[in-house]
Length: 94
Image (cartoon, rainbow, N blue to C red; front, side, top):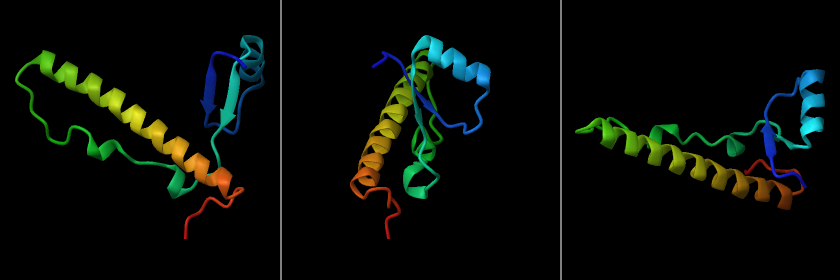
């Protein structure tokens, strides 16, 4: 297993890109087919209409927000991917 995993969302990959990924020995994962259940929209929940008293406060908040946002997206991706796998591909919740 490589130390880098690329979660690739482009179905049309240039041959040159594919060769470079093979040369680097990166593991490439594809996104599953689109589903509202698998496409979390968490952006509107972070820093809505927030005012900061200094640039330093704004920088700290944006760094924390970015970290928290990415962690939340990854957690949801893992949870929903697990649901999809446990349902053997029938990942649409009814």
